[in-house]
Length: 426
Image (tube, rainbow, N blue to C red; front, side, top):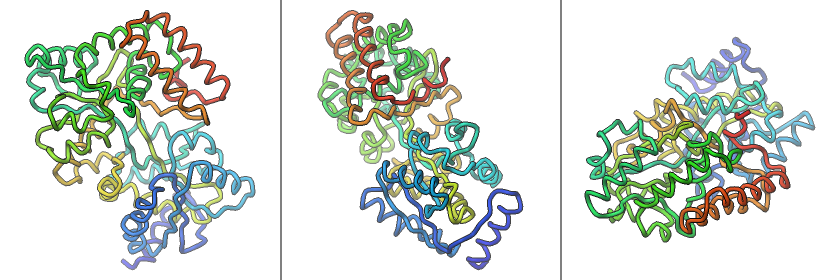
């Protein structure tokens, strides 16, 4: 089928179901806060988007932008009632600022789901629904996972299904490994540039309290810190010097490790047959997991919303999702993409991320924002609590009362929005 015929066939379908209307230009302007670095932007222009142009005849102008630039431009075009941006790619937290300037994509979502090869992660779709409208379509994600050397699986309690891992099982598992080998082989990075604070506010806190910050000083939080003190007895003693888990996994200094996917990727790519990627453990309130979720949205003032939908359809195809994973390392949000990833380390990682994203007890945490120049203070509250409670053995209740007051003050003085999942609590 000729390229333009293909485009008009899709547009006719969209109009026939009342999805959208208006075709203004053979070019689309796509602005994104992701793939912004020069090399990634160049990859998007030369590798990602040309097949779309070849197929549809629509040329795409890709613009990488900082978050304030994109936000200000969308709001300015919305207020002017006329815009030049057809499609935007942005993080979940940023959409909360300007979602009223975006088209409701509920009908477009139904159309995508009707294609039969576009099973979008349900939790991500729900996050994209803001104030009753589908503000964005999930596009791609990054996250943190648990990685285990296959040697460690022999010591997992009851040889249970790894998908059902809980924090109690993780503790018993680490203890079993220590008793069998005489080595503390659980790795949680706690070096000066490590992401320990993400483990605390985005994984442990939601899993034990149901919130990242709202129940910082609560009975559930006291139980969580008591658990972490016990777990830390089996964490590798080098942890306070480790910023990432790649090297420790490859040297087998640790057998079980939690970290960002980018910080375990090298180990899995080098020895894909030696490791498994597991969903993060679950606690009493669910499986707390940080998701760096990127979505696609169409501004209300888009000159070509029909063309923008075609680009969304292309960017969420399983094959395109795999291309993105191979090109810039963002993971798919479409279940069918997992089966399209070639064998090797990337498939091991992608399969693990897909299983974690589909967990029925998933409790998504979005990294809190809105602190402006004081964003470092948020992380410091959690890291200071860790130092005081776990490393120095100070009374948990006293530390939580002091650090909790600092956290409340930070939110109040900066006006930062309540993060997910805290916003869902009464």
